[in-house]
Image 1 (cartoon, helix red, strand yellow):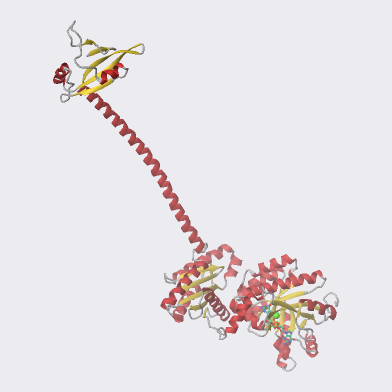
Image 2: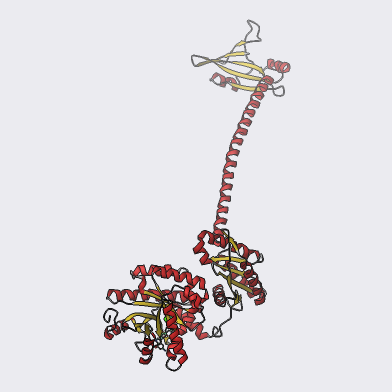
Length: 579
Ligand code: C2E
Ligand code: CA
Ligand code: CA
């Protein structure tokens, strides 16, 4: 060890003999200068590069190996007054440093491991949550897609999915020429079961029907619930009409076995309409419509199933054009109602009017309802036409009430209208909106309308009667109907078909039919209306036969609303005036 003063003179050397002159051979080193100016400095000396000037250091190096030369400033009251120089064995220092460094490494390593563990857990948890969330989103999307394409009650595909599959079949068919069939199934007594046993039983039944239908079909077929008790089956690559009929038979048989519901064994038969692609239709809507017509035929004929038979006139271009024009005719105001008076025979008083539809075509002129009503029935427009007729008739009736005219208005219903279980509710709403009492409205339904689906017709008629709406059987005698059934139908009025009334003058047989119909109706407690009364002679005979009401050209033809009102005022037969 050596101690230096500020003037860079050695004042002490540990290995110098007492009293020796302390001198330094070389000039001051950089380290010494730094130490004298206040900072601690050090340098490692090794045997390869010893300081040339210091003999003693060589000796030390030889004895101890590498040395660390350290210059430490000596301070007095903050001022550096000198420096001392120490030689330390570098191996020990290195060992100490190495030990410290190792400890530091260990601490850093440990710290990093802990950090890694913590960060890893956080990241893992976050990514797990993200993954769960993504899976939940995916499940949700799948669920809502499934919900939008399936019927919640039965789990079967809905109309949208059926439409989609039909489109695929149409596109495929164009390429491959394969035929696809649509079976439209309507349960015959569902409404009655639903009404008498309650919705729950109805639901159980529908589910069971869905299961049975699925069982008799191939994997590639689609069974869909279209709403209410209506099911649709799409049969791709069906192998023509024969193949479709084979499936229809199997489906019909499957529905013939009684269904166990609430401990009861219920008979639920179905009527099946069959239509084929591309033989009967080009689009899904057309296919549905054709199958609907066939289903109606199956109901009417009670055959269980029917294949659509193209109408000979369907291909007629002008007819198709007319049907498409009818679609917009109501909106364009071309369709109006005319009113034909119904006259009480005893008093000569007008008690009501039948609303008869007229279509004033911009180029063809007036088109008779006998021509365009069947067109509407075949093209699916009849429901909107019927609603238009009912709404207009109720509005007219409101005007009569406002003017103090006491008349009922009759509206004709078509076959398709009566299986629409929504109809009574729609009528109730329309009556409510105009504040017209239900007994001011009468609905005329023909035998064929009733016989198409007697059970359902009875359900709808009963609801209308419960509401207070009057119901008449139109064209009585013209079709086939079971008298036993009519007896149980809650109607108020029977209208003798005009062919018998018109024939009365020439054909005695017609006279006998008219007389017996009047008697039958009275025995059932019904009011009788004779339509087609054209002459005084017929009027007189009908009166003597006991007929209640007459309608015909003798009294008046059907007139536009305003004309009818003028006629009523001038004829003096007004409900209130001629009483
Ligand atoms: P309908 O219900 O039997 O109506 C009576 C038809 O006989 C009416 O023909 C009427 O003008 C006609 N008529 C009335 N008095 C006489 C008469 O003294 N002699 C003769 N020869 N005929 C008479 P229109 O108005 O051409 O209606 C024909 C059929 O069209 C109606 O027969 C009815 O089935 C149907 N129709 C008319 N309007 C509607 C409607 O709004 N909806 C529905 N679904 N069908 C309607
Ligand atoms: Ca009628
Ligand atoms: Ca009639």
